[in-house]
Image 1 (cartoon, rainbow, N blue to C red):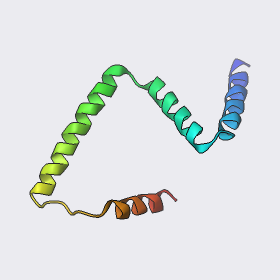
Image 2 (cartoon, rainbow, N blue to C red):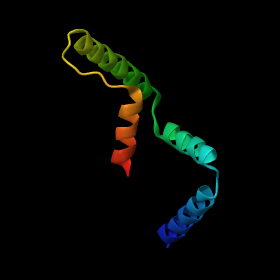
Image 3 (cartoon, rainbow, N blue to C red):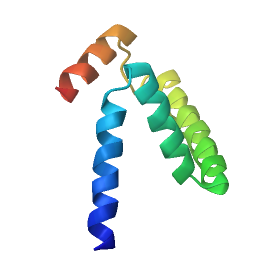
Image 4 (spheres, rainbow, N blue to C red):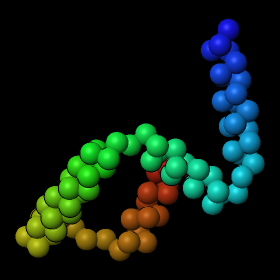
Length: 82
């Protein structure tokens, strides 16, 4: 019985969230995601991203990767999301 009430509450919250502006929904999403993150994991993620950026930069400097304009990459990403 408790599960059904909780699901009902979640559905109601979801409906209210969809009435928010796109900016407010994005802020809400960020807050919810941050509430799930642990501080240690966040620090580790930052280190992992730095390592990945260095790896990609080294590949670029060695000529082992191709370069594309940012707008083309973003257009391709948007097309893949549709």
